[in-house]
Image (tube, rainbow, N blue to C red; front, side, top):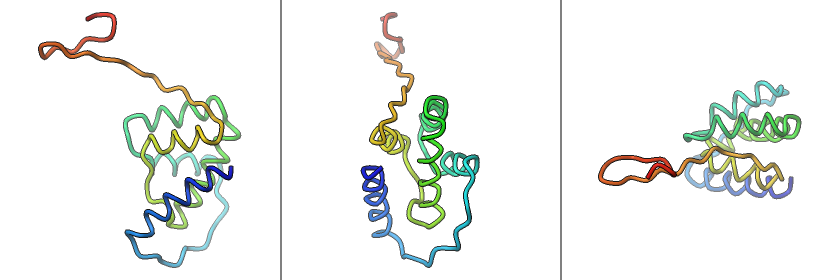
Length: 118
């Protein structure tokens, strides 16, 4: 969890340099379902939904705890958004190996082939 905190703090420092710091609103207790919704909302990228779904399917309890921490930091104004690869790295550093469907495509003469068709 120390690596996760370090990574999240690094992201927070980058964001703090570009924006003014305001007083954080009062915190309320976040449920697991709310945390997942917040993480879905702030994570951008093509693979974001797939990464979140696979993390929840494989590491339900631990993934929800991590998502709660990310959601808290978002509500405090520390994290505004995450890219899908950043979320993947956070999960990986927490010891959660989340498989992502990978397709290799080859383009020849303007036509796209999947690996094995070319």
